[in-house]
Structures are given as C-alpha cells and as structure tokens.
Image 1 (cartoon, rainbow, N blue to C red):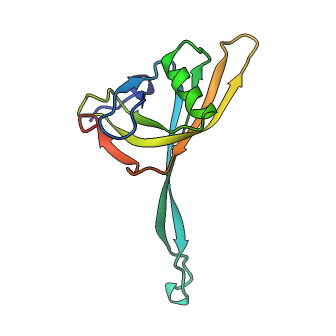
Image 2 (tube, rainbow, N blue to C red):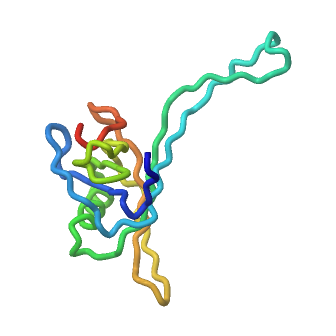
Image 3 (cartoon, rainbow, N blue to C red):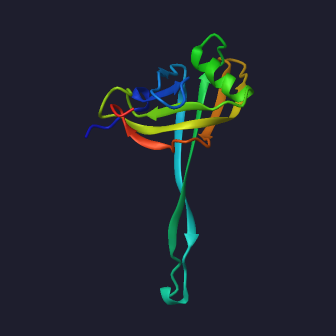
Length: 148
C-alpha cells in the first residue's frame, strides 16, 4: 500500500439527506482533521491483580477544518446555511476521491457546531468549522469510495 498525503484527501457535502447523495467537493477546505474515538467503561475488579481494565462503549466523531471565507463558494454557503439555520448536512471525509474504490472515510449526517471567522493581518479570511454527527435515521458509517 502506498502512503497517502493530505493534499489528495477530499471533503464532501451533499444537499440531499437520505436517498442518493449528490456529493460536492469542498475545494477550499484545508487542514482537515477527522477525530474518531470510543468512550470507555471501567471494568476493573479486585481479581485483575492490580490492573485497570476497560471496555469500549460509544464511538464518537468530530471533524475540524478551515475553509476560505468566500460567501460565493457553494461549500461555504452550504456550511453557513447549516450553521445559521440549524440544519443538518450530510458529509463524507475521504482519503481520496469518493468515486475511487480504494478511498475510505466517514460518511455521516452532521450538525455544524462551530463556524468561526479568522481575520489575520496578512492572510486570507478563513472560517474554522467543527461538525459532529447529528441524530438521523442512518448512523455514521465507514465507507469505501465506490460504496457511497
């Protein structure tokens, strides 16, 4: 397997929730971080010979990224609309093109929790975005690119 680089990864959104998504790449995305974790339950007992033991519980996901602050960009507009109007947005965070069967990533209906603007003196205005899975009839899932 060849190593992949962040430049080749893709971040997508779909205006459709449920049914067949119409994936649109957020081309102005940068510094995307997909956080995947599990909660834990302490199962330690006296019989563990002084060792703490645990079992995994609920999975958790969050995605943090930046986009350029460009209201004319469709990705910016979709994320801003989801944030300001308390709407869900379906997203796919992939390590390559979503149509490539070797690409993998998380697909989930998301809620936008952060949409913060940064105004550095000598840089482009950016928006820091944070999204997390929202209640929906479909659970977040790990997908291969061709199984969208």
